[in-house]
Image (tube, rainbow over all chains, first blue to last red; front, side, top):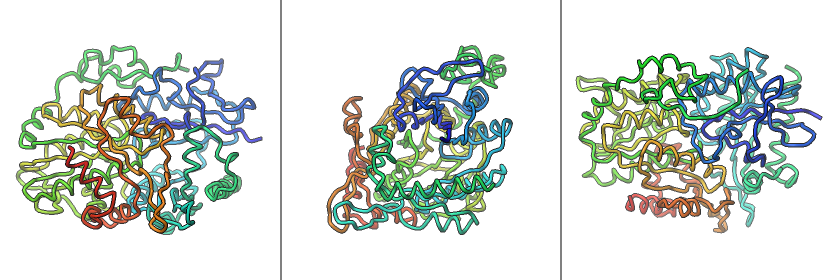
Length: 228
Length: 305
């Protein structure tokens, strides 16, 4: 079984603990550093997030850049991840302290395989992702591909597809910037509900078109990581 | 490695505790703060107070989470306020890394000019001005890869060096979070009167979780909260007219949160594909589709403010 780690460096808005239904366990130390929080008894999915370090879940992390940089440095260097097949890093929007910090610290320890860029179909979204692509090029991160999220909604009542957040932006962006288009993920209220309730969407709703989209994107990514 | 992990707050570079608080341990700036160099008040604060004394109302638009429609709201709030031609309105975009406002306002490719009285903002209409770092970038691919201090400097310039003139309303659109941009905006506006903040959310708990943090931020920096707007609140299928909750309010949505925290819920804006299209085309959704349910909610929100 693959062992995956998730590093959540969205310090102001750490959502991953809730999405994986982890709550707020204490973070302990061992000889090799801080022990990440495992989502399962078999320890196949490990997570570190500032969400675990807050006494009060509604407490705001009101930090300027230098303190965020220092915390992220600790997350990368001081967490005893152990042997991982993949470390996924979830970032906040932007091209600033968090992004620079996580990249600089990761590079000290190992190779960074690349970045996945997530957009919605709208020009307003792809407009920002263009700048994110420039960030990757300037910092030397390989772009593994672009994912278009919230790509259409199929009405459960009449099956009509509505392009709520416009259409086609992800693929256009990929063409424009010479990047791989990994795929489009449609909106599914069941995904939102699963995430809120900490359910495993993939286990609960395997017939969802959203699931097949995510699944096929993951496959493509894994293959590209193996051939790198 | 470090000692036990903790997550305490930065006391602020100008606080008495700067560099001396327990939460300063490990911060790269600790020595500088402890030396007292950062405590002298920034003269820009008084200058900005002076400059913006002719701005009657200042409203910050905040969100905890990204992607909830903050910039969409800020832009349409500005349009709605400016529909009264007797009012002077300005929209300041301090999302330094992801400046969406130029596109949403139909001002892509515009550049900022300098004059004797400072930088002139870009005008959408006679009574509606906009400023964004987007106007200072020469290409849509340019990335602003700046750390906190440089972003703060830019925000200071936007407030001090832009020739806003006399304004009835200054709306400030922010990036998501509770970090440099937010602290700076509050700090640099501290010699002026700020009406307060409008906080944008979607119905999901994952979004509300971050809004609660944003509310704590406002309380911490003593920024009044005008109210909360819930975006993406239901979707009416244009074909069969049935409503779907695409982002279900699993914990009661903004309605329950506002009731719990005794905050005004200013409105619930439904999803409408025409909103995204208007934003992409740089048009005002309020003008394009004035009879849509979403446009009506915007009108009522503005009236209630």
